[in-house]
Image (cartoon, rainbow, N blue to C red; front, side, top):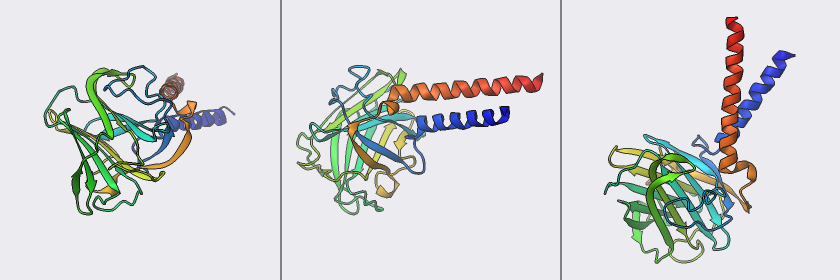
Amino acid sequence: MKRKISVLMLCSLLMITAVGTVMAGNPDYSITEYGAVTVATVDGEWTAEDEWTDAPITDMTGTATGQFGYNMDFNIYGLQWLVEFFDDDTDDAEDYWKICFDDSNSGGSAPDSGDFMIEIVGHTTMTVYQGTGSGWSEVDPAGEITWSDSIGTSPLNSEPHWILEVVESDKTSGIIQIPNAPPTGMNIIAYDASTDTTAAWAPDSDVDNPDSWGLVADYSMDPIPEGLTFGVMAALSSIALLAGSLYLRKHAKKRIE
């Protein structure tokens, strides 16, 4: 009986841990687009501690680490991104952020006309590109995108680091149009020139190769479920790790005795 209970406990811990990391980089590279409760204040910081708790938080990996939040505000029919680069707290002219999206999730080995890239270089200059079928061509977003970044702390990381906020104001008009509902492709990259390191989602992705990007697999017209908010995720992961640690320590002690 004790053995059955122990197996059940371990399975439960694995399920809890899986829920806490379901949106991390993995072979599926898959997330869900949820509706935002409010439009983010675009100032490069969490204006309030709950500003981004209406967006799933997804891990970025590579030679550096970071996380991003993403959702859609149905009031303005626009998209919102939060990107935090935990390993970078220096201001370099060669630093960059890149956000790419593939409206029809058509993939391909090179960006086509349905692919767009927002590039911010040196924390000062934003350029928007559209795919040509073989590469990228600069386009004028005509005020469709608002962005800001700054070095600060956040509920995701208490050490000073770069935080980026981007809002695309209306994805059905203007130059940048993303009228299709998910599935859509998406790629997030942050680069630190001081350390020559990169954090990315999907892992090992290439902005010039949409086949390597992540996937916004589906969407919900409702706000993110309470069970998937950042605060609940962090709490569940901590509980799972603590319970697992206590379980292993207890049984290790029995073996020693």
